[in-house]
Length: 320
Length: 320
Image (tube, rainbow over the protein chains, first blue to last red):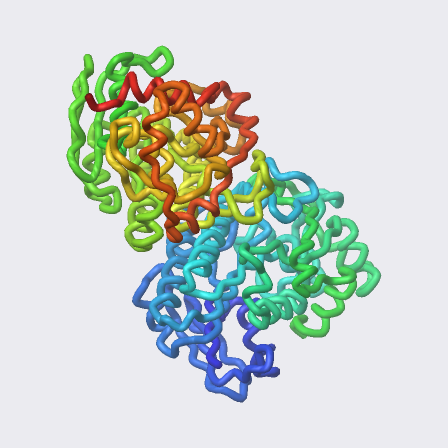
């Protein structure tokens, strides 16, 4: 089977590609080829199958057609303009997150093979008038353009699945922490940098207090869940193909304490605590507490501690 | 103030235009001009202000720019491809209901005047895993492409309002019955024709049983509610600008009995009861029971009986 990963140059796309390169299976089906597509040409990964790497913008239908040249059986659609970027650059967010997702769905539909499509939605679709904790079945109330565009993508994935154009599965990802690499324009970027950067001797700023609750997941766990989403029989989702993915809640303070228990007290001393009104406006519109019952029933997994996340970061990602 | 009505040639657009022509006020602001736009040039209406009538397709941004030439202060966005049509012609539904709504929002945004935009959403955004009755705050679970596209329009209206591009208010309209005119491609068309056509001596088919529950509103009432939506201060909606509009529930049997009480027993004898699997699939995905608490709190009104709807149809719409 052939796999396409959009956002295949991003940290999550690269981790997913490396995982599938190492274990070239989705369920009991062997991966025969992979396309990694991103706005710049993705890095290569080690794999027993050919890996095609493409630079292209999903807001351009012709670029999307190129990504689909191999007729993929499974598409992981991870490409997106992140939250603070989409908030600052409204048209860019619409072009990539809404119209780009539409182009991906149209390209998949044009194949007439009903490919599996795993869509990375976000817990940012929730907020506002939603209850605390957020349970399955609550009205999506995004407080950002990013969350709005992700929610619209969900509705499209749902309807394209109902029509039989794709076999879609949408996962509302928790904040992925500890995210490797450099800080990006996600408003949640600090939720990784205060661990990642301070563990590597640099300072990092936390714009919220220690009591701010984060709904999060480790990179290893979310990669495992993305593969699981592709392995499931679509019918097990029932009518609604979009679900709140499993995660766990810790406050920033609890996460810092976990880091200290695993890696000692030095890193915490490198955190600064300066306000950032723009970031605070966005992240205070998000929710920290969820009950992801449907995801648990479908076999998706969550972390048992943030200590694990710190250990996995030290094992997988630290630049030495 | 200047008013634009998209779908201004449709039965609802025409009724709204005539109402505003007769009482040229929205709140305490006097209407100075009106544009009626539709896919074919709308019929003229009597009004103390100039009425511009335009034929244009909202899926074409240039046509939308023409509709906005007068820089409207209030936009009633009613234009849509109806349910069975959008289900049969997927791309046409997407072009008009999703991209057309986007073009309307972009044209309104380009004005930089933050116009009021009243968006006709639909109770078809609900269904599937939603509880019965459907309460405010339940996840939108549309079972049709029409409902999906309406739900996406809601999310756009919400985010464009949050960004200050428009001052949006979305109303999820109940099935409007008794709808005058000819049968159309709405799957709900029979919910009007079994009254409208039989009262005028013609036969009409009912594809569901007498116990099928309909969430409905009379044309007079929904026109009053559309105007009310434009009159409200946007802030009274709170964060969420899209609401389930007030309506009432009766079964098809109760509605027929109401018709008989008002207009005698002859009409019921003209109803045929033949199955129509395509229509049944669509309408059985809809919901008949709602609790529209937020709408009631905001002063929207519902009918007190279907007898009223029959009387109003005989007064307003019957072709003699």
